[in-house]
Amino acid sequence: MTISPSIARADIFGGGPPDSYYYADNALHMYCFDLNFIPAWENPMVDALTNLQNQTNIIVQESVTCSADTDVAFLVKDGPFWTGILGKTTCRNLAKQAGVCAGSIIVLNSDLLTNYQMRRKTSCHELGHSVGLSHATTGDDCMISGISSLITYNSHHISHINGYY
Amino acid sequence: MNRFITTALVLGLSASFSGCSSKLEATAQATSSGFVSQIADEIIHPSLDFQAASSPQILADVATTVFVGEVIGVRGTREWVSKSLQATYLKTTVFEVRVLSSRKGDLKEGAVVLVEAMLSPKNSISALESRIKGSKVGVFSVAAKFESETDIFKGDFILEPNTRFFTTTGPQGFVISNPDDANLYWPVLNDVEQGTLADAMPGGSVIPKE
Image (cartoon, rainbow over the protein chains, first blue to last red):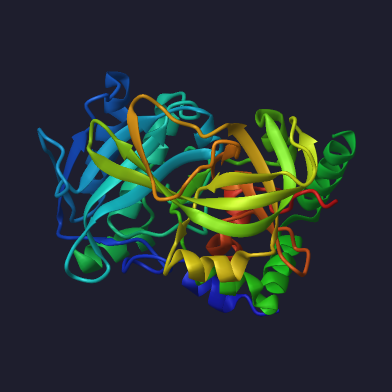
């Protein structure tokens, strides 16, 4: 059994599915909140955005309105259909350049993310996807799947981001 | 149902105790069969992040309908459009499935229903259909054609009046059993093939066999 290629593939940065997530179109990451946004969610989301800015070359800035060109639109959903899903990142607006997304939607599950820590971790995770990060295979980074207390990016992922933006 | 629960528990515990090595073996088995890769060629990875669902029993408890069926066709897709954002945030695929064995709910063996699953065809519906037709699937559903007031739903398929429609419980609610009987969660195929499924769902990489 050979597993090395699988491990290598697990950390491809950017370029879009099926191998990875899309690059953002530039280092300025505009964000907005859905009109039905629940105010109590703002702190963990903004804290995760601030962390992305502090740890990397990405600059975050709030957009008053949500448009297809807004880099990240946060949406909070609940209901039985989302059983087992903490969060989801979808590219709503593919850029002309292959493998680049000009606008993503981040859906967070309000049924499962019941406290600040969980919302902060999942916001960190989905924001990572929105700039091209894949899932982490080591337990020192918020890009690991599932529930954890990790709310920052490791040096490997920071290198990916800063090497591109 | 009791047999189902018992089998689920046994397999769930088995997966938990056997740990990572069994997952890698399952990965190798799935990869070597080629079947998973072939199906994966026809879907868009859903980019989802999973709760640590530790066993199929969790899904069975949440679901109102659980059955094993055979895919007999792909009917189309459905878009979930946020009214407030005026944007599609989810695209699902609607499968036509014949019930082989009902485990929970009122479905009868032989009934043909539509099942909405959280995955998207990468190339075309017909290409996906040619790959998946005849496959055995486990279906966990919580709602008949789930809809919400905050969304607009757009479907490109026809739902006949007498045909029942089941929305599955997220990404783990539509489970495909491959010919090698690896019983992999679907559609987390990339995670399975990359060996990262253990991180996403500890002990959760198998579903109950019949």
